[in-house]
Length: 327
View 1: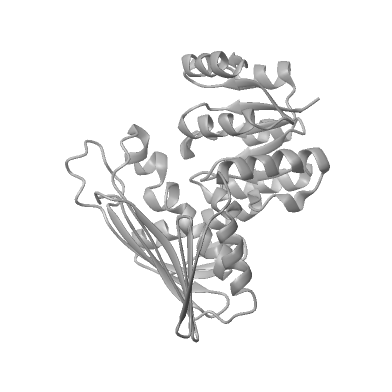
View 2: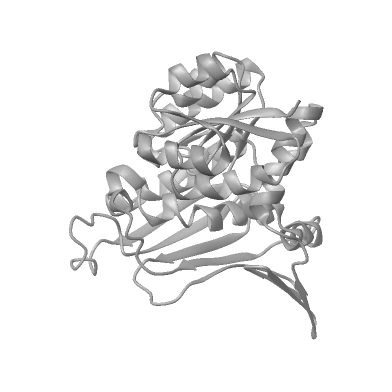
């Protein structure tokens, strides 16, 4: 018998997970719940699962082994706690939420329950990301330069900062997470954000551009720039040290060492497929090391992005202290 999986939320990102799980012979997707019942019913017709409107009823009746939480940042409510109380393993899509104290409370409950809890930072499962991390191991890093530049996301809740947290929290969080994956933990942030240039988008309250200075625990310095007013898409993380420069952009890794440049193209398939396969296998075998981004790890990325929002509002740098940030 396969790992029984249920879904809370069947919007866009859930469709990607459903497709990946349908290709995994050890996963059995049994049910999905959504506040728009029609979406759950449509998923039911496509994947042969049972549709629910009430998540408590779904968890009680279906008794899944794992729950994929694929809801917007503002909509987590007590979904994690409901799973934890039943000993259900979790895959929680990024970002984990918008209130750092609530996220920390959820993390503590997950740790106490001893369940497996993964997060949706799928880029860590790319072979070029692992290769980049391996290359940097033991090397002294001087600077990290990163960016995520793209157009506006038309999803209604995305433009509302009280629901999405803004581009840095909801979207460019992947790039923030990759800076941590490659260069280590961030010690403090100092952010500047502009809230103009989106007047043509009714109800938009998120920053249109942002720049965040980063201080790493290693002593390295860096920054990440974001924009949602571009006509194209561009994202990369660049790591500089003495006589080397590493650039990870999409599925391509470029390493300049001295005067020699080497370029590596990813040979792995879908990062989502690799991520979900690893999660299912971790449940089957109990091997936690298969999960490259745990809930606790995603908590640290959330702390950085939410601290950056706080810094932009206060005009002050925010110091990260373990799992706590403060001005």
